[in-house]
Amino acid sequence: MGTRDWSIQEIARLAGTTSRTLRHYDDIGLLPPSRIAANGYRHYDEQALVRLQRILLLRELGLGLPQIAQVLAADMTGTVGLWTDAPLLAVAYAMGSLVLGLGAAVLGLRLGRPREERPPAGASS
Image (tube, rainbow, N blue to C red):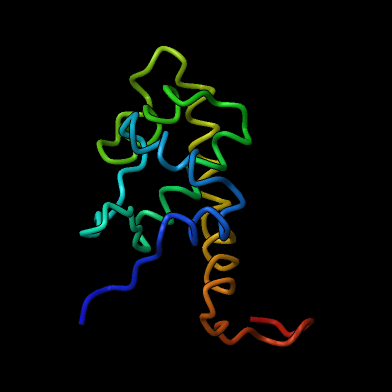
């Protein structure tokens, strides 16, 4: 059984963006679809959703698409500290990493996944 994926329209709705934006991200190599169906429709898996979440977060932090591409590439190669504008990108990367867990939980809820068990409020862990 294969992994679940979602159509471009479903992802756009879940992420609060447009399918046009997602197509643009594909065109510039920022977010390629996980697969393209026989009808030409783009589909995205969970790994692509996490990447999209990071892209949207970095956009909210004010980074442009070329800088976001650098941050995502550095995530793959571990070279954040080598850039000329490393302080800004390192902060954006760190913030993205911190928020990623929360965003993944929210996305999981939107996709109908059950919540993990949490200790009651006020209980020590």
